[in-house]
Amino acid sequence: MSKHMKKAHGGLDYPRLKEQGLNPDEIIDFSVSINPFPVHESIINAVRNCSLTRYPDSSAFELREAIARHEKCTAEEILVVNGTSQGINLIGEALLDSRSTVLIAAPAYSQYKNISQLKRAEIIELQSDVSQDFNPDIKVIIRIIKEKKPQIFWVCNPNNPTGTYIRKEKMEEIEKVAITAGTIVVIDEAYVAFTNKDLRFNQNSSSILRLNSMTKDYGIPGLRLGYIHGDKELLKTISDYQPEWSISEPAQKAGIACLEEQEYYAGTWSAIRKECERIRNKLSRLGLKVLETESNFFMVRLGNRESVSENETGYASLLQKALEKKNMQIRDCSSFGYPDYIRIGVHSRENNDKLIKAIDEERHIWE
Image (tube, rainbow, N blue to C red):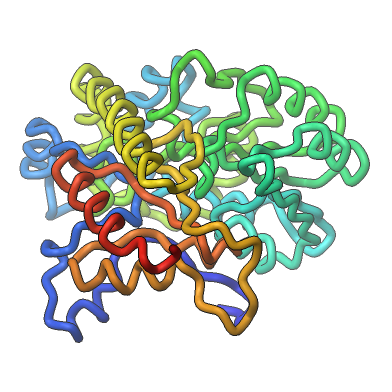
């Protein structure tokens, strides 16, 4: 990987835990934004009963049909991927080259930039303003699409790490401009299950590609599962770049089972939204700046300093080191360019309360 590329994400560092003699099961991981509720028993049974002695269906046809029923589209408008990160890479491989320009709504998941760099595309990063709580400037996005006509506009909605959400009225404005400019809007909806349905942008067109993460929605990160929803001709082009048998038999069977348990999971998504508000309010009462969110995670600013010099350590890094001693992990937002911000993924109520207590005990770091 190029030295200019960031391979930064949440999750546990397994080799490091082994060096420290720690069991991953002992760590409470708030650095990832995964549904924390137990996996439904029917999904576990589906994995237990799948065949491990034959190759899986490389086209994931049964799962695509199940997703299509869920999305109210055709199976040809669905491409199942080995997690949304594979989806991002496939889109970049298929649609970008050295003549391309891309627009990225930042701060954002590093993989949008990484694949764009690998394809030697010109990259325009539009950083959201901290003073506006990271809400993207839609007028500027529209102006850049009109003027630069990027091949791809990468946008995470709800956005990682900020939790901000571009509502349907604004997305409709972007879509209209993108159609005229010939821009493909890649909407990473990895966290959309946790967003209020009334806010969501649901339109589809030949200019829209949606990335969805079953990994996060259903709390099955060990299986790596997601899908792209979009124009069937565009998906044919993208699918040519996907290695055969990318989706294992256990993942395919689990995905079908997940879609059959919508009542259970809709209940978990609603409960997560409520729990998110509860812990945000508790942290606010500690005097911390807690950003608004439309997802199952949120950002918190530690302290009040205006900037961090190169020779200063971010408060987020210092807090992370302190929490490691208590077998907890949060997401240090330094990799996004914000060393005094942390991102917290909602966990169980019991664990969330443990984290709030631990943060309160370490507030001397920034006070």
